[in-house]
Length: 388
Image 1 (cartoon, helix red, strand yellow):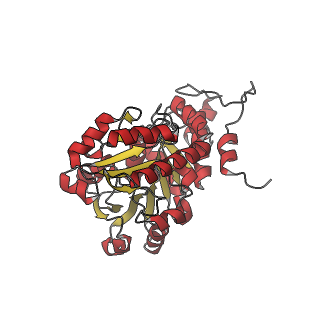
Image 2 (cartoon, rainbow, N blue to C red):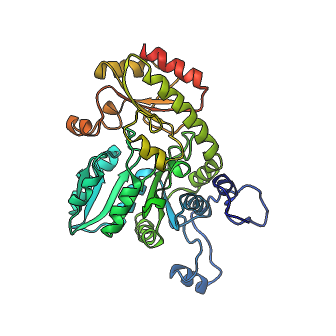
Image 3 (cartoon, rainbow, N blue to C red):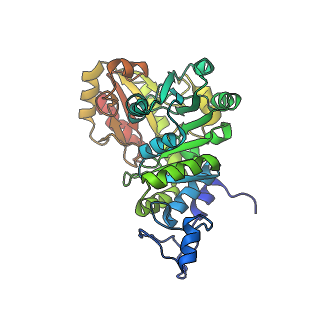
């Protein structure tokens, strides 16, 4: 049989059935596992045997979830985390030593920015930012102590696109580790490993869950690097719970069909927003007006469900819009079945200085919209009345 398609892998990748021959994978709510005898216990802890020891290390449900993501991303293996940010922190902390240097895109999630600016410096780990439209300048930023290139694409919340192929070429040329936060795209829309990424990180809380229920994160990629991340995480304890892993693994079964509809709705809403007189500009990867449209079409299967747009009138207009929505939810989350509007300047990126926010395009009137699965006519009607 030929290699199964994405949807088939997502549905049919399962852990081994128990003696009860269940059709759907059961939930393994256990903190620990028993051993046959002292020798079995010794061999297991010395890793001569590959088996479950303690659910902080591994669990059948987390193993199934990781295996699915690894297959979807074309990765060798991975490790699952309690949240997306624990995946980002643990993956970087496991690989970086005092004195190391990271090159990162300037447009990163607010908490990732805090890692680079507030916490890593305490351990003598430095960073340099590059702008999303200045990838060609990365090589001039490389130092002898540079170890990692980190980037999000599409970015949060500006929905900018960074050329993964160019990043992969630079990382290979200079023997650097390329780490990509693929949260907005998911494994269905984009596979950074094809372009040279060594590690891919997801906040599974977002589109992978898709219904706003549980928190989770995952990193997949090169087995040697994942081994270091596993050893770090085994001792520091950011593991994903079995229940959340079970939920997320089930969610992956519908990821493809959900993203097709999310992306269809998002494109229609983006096209509407481009015509509205109270909207200054719109960014959506598959709009031809997007400055990195050609790059998006090259490396993404679909445009995803996130739109950013600037309302005329600044911060007052932005707040008025958020207060005026009736169908859409006011929330800091994204990737839900329900459409969500967020005002980044006062929420997700509020801890950044005004200068830092403007540097990555987070203006006072910027709105991030996570387009859900409601009927598109109802979504547009709500956005239209709120803008008016």
